[in-house]
Length: 206
Image (cartoon, rainbow, N blue to C red; front, side, top):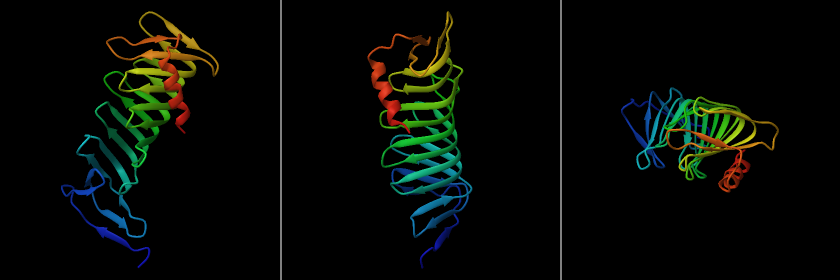
């Protein structure tokens, strides 16, 4: 029968597989046979056993091989923690989209933005809208971070502080390149060639 929902009551210890993930629901799972979308109305945990990627949320929808949508959730990777009001993971494109993001890692602390795009295979994060960070001490409109290379590019108006100076940029043409590795974050308005590559990622993000 079209429109039929299959209701499966599963305990939190029971796991089912979809795509590369194992699924641990916090309550019931609801499978829409028409669309193939499974809903976890009380949330749960999704774990990629190969990569170690882990998703947790208070409400989850997913479709095998297609997408995962999470409300009030967290994405944990080897590189850091992404906490957001909403998370949409496109499984075919390996792209994550976030609303109300807070990101932390061993080289960035409490990075916040209104929205963000994370290219999982390349480990590139693009954040925009009221960008704030505790380390580096930064306020900006748009920031691109190469998570693996520990490099960042700020585009547009910004204020950046380190131990010795405060740098500011005004206007849409302002640029600041960040060296995020090591014990001290460094920023320079003399953008190296690597900044061109990071700027291209900003254009790819919605």
